Image (tube, rainbow, N blue to C red; front, side, top):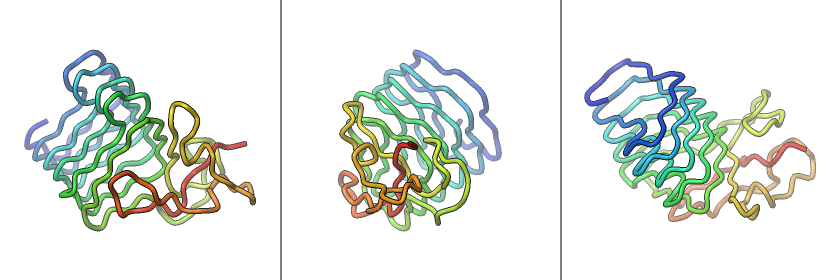
Length: 184
């Protein structure tokens, strides 16, 4: 989509392409419930686009799962991003005021440059999260070998949220203050 406004991409399977979903100079769009897998370059690329909602998508087994480049004010929630070879999720340093929460990340490489005003969690809210816990808050940060933060974090009170913040987001000064852990 180039220079598109208020469009909906919903319930698609995009397999074995160069690019799965690509927006450029687009705003106010809804990208939801899509399966994007086995793409050469990107599963989903959001370029110079703002105020879009990306929810319920699965981006897997591509070179790059999700890429935000120079994109502001987007909401990214309830997505599954896993097993991508170059990186699972990337936000360039000129992407600002994006809200990223309740996502399942399970990749070896996650690269999040700083940007301004991005947030990786919301206030702890009752509701079933992406990994089956009782609260929606931050994101699940996993690795395919089982050594990801959310796979090894302590949750003494059993609320499905780690007892400590995830502060080691690659290349970022940001933290997820309410990271999810696997529901037990």
